[in-house]
Length: 580
Ligand code: OXT
Ligand code: ADP
Ligand code: MG
Image 1 (spheres, protein in one colour):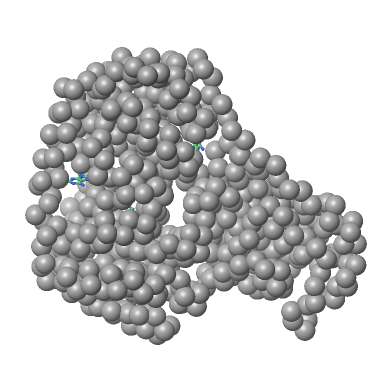
Image 2: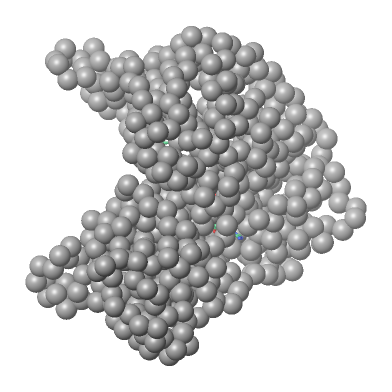
């Protein structure tokens, strides 16, 4: 489409017969069904955003690029289409990089597009406005990085970015657009012919029959089979086949945190509540879209059974993932949809039930742990502990299972993961592979924009601080997000003291009794403090029913948390004794 009437006085002069780089970017994205841009405006991309909005795209403007980037990243995870984040040059670009890199690490398709300064000046280091060799800096942090120097190449640049983000193992892509190119004029008719509609951006990758049969033979031989579902399985959107496959095996399964809900957590085969028993005792482990990284103790060590006594079947689209940590006896390389449907087919009608001795033992362990936890979830203590507060939220998600739960923090994350059952696929979004704080408001905004579903963001008070200013964004776009800040006065706890007795507080401690709810009121949202699980439950129910942006300051006992939540073991131990 050629340039329309400029929406601002100082926008480039374009006629009906001329177009330019920035319009071609918009046209190329729209041609590929990318209709939302997450961004922070400024030189040289402000008009690009204005024109995008004028051309009917949804432009969600954030307060900081990291959160625009996280919104784009989670849009990619939820939709299988790359989420697009647009930033200004140097500092804006750098702010977007955490999200780009996080997307790549988590295998989410995303494109970070940044305006950049004059190539000639940057390359001679002559000191341009926001000078930086952005392409070079982005390269090691993403799957692919491209620069478009001429308007006639925008179509190719956008097409390559989309294909790189979505195909194979998904990830982040950087697209560098120098300011000069954005204003470059082109004949509109000629320009239209340069655009590319990407055909089949994520081609199916069919596994070999031999690999599938090898995997099934190993699974059939198991006395103690275990399936681990990872967020790759959630991303693949092969929900019905995955469920049918898991049920046909009859094996216990463990969902990794963002795979929760692929089958409802209340499913009789879900064995999250017997996690350590499963990992230690299983003899054959089938990984579906989950890497044997730190979250699975690298497949070895005391979490697992004896080295060599456990055998692995691994389904993944990335062949290089195989044997990354331990030997994989049955690698199945392909896209999860194709792999699982071929496995279902090859299992035939008479697949044997998983051995009863094993499934019965796991069921007993699971029920024991669930029964142990149940009474703690009922408490109405003031101040709240994690179990009481999360018990109230667990009931709400059960009542409203299409709610998307965003979760970050340390204790707030770890307790919520095991307490709040998820019932539908892709309804739990969290800190992922890096355990990164700061995904909260970006993920919440992205999830609300992409799905239109209600979002409940349960975040620690420290975690909230990383993206808290974006509550203004939630209010500005009137997004149906209820943020619950678990306020325990600090990182992990609010009880640390400065051992010197000096005036500074300890590094993990915040202002006591902060009123995060008042921040929300400042932007016209609903802000409430809740001190008991009953109050919290009422406030969240009201927020989800109204759809109004809401922040609930949930007052949690400052003594209730533990150091680093469930991963305190990762802190190095000093040989020097701490001062009392
Ligand atoms: O089987 P066993 O007996 O072992 O028991 C397990 C299950 O079987 C059982 N279970 C159940 N029982 C009963 N019923 C049910 N339904 C049930 N379900 C499970 O419970 C146990 C535990 O189960 P789980 O959780 O599945 O198993 P486990 O062993 O924990 O699993 C291992 C892991 C590794 C898979 C799991 O722990 C995991 O996924 N962990 C992720 C941890 C993580 O990523 N943490 C975030 C990072 S921590 C730290 O880095 C923080 N920082 C630093 C920082 C970061 N991260 N980023 C940036 C940009 N800057 C700095 C900061 C600043 S956290 C943090 C802020 C923290 O403060 P906040 O105020 O925000 O938060 P609070 O702590 O709340 O104050
Ligand atoms: P989790 O953190 O839940 O364990 P990971 O992020 O470690 O999950 O693993 C996800 C894996 O899923 C990655 O290795 C990635 O290559 C793989 N993956 C992503 N999408 C697909 C797909 N469509 N088909 C097959 N594998 C996929
Ligand atoms: Mg805290």
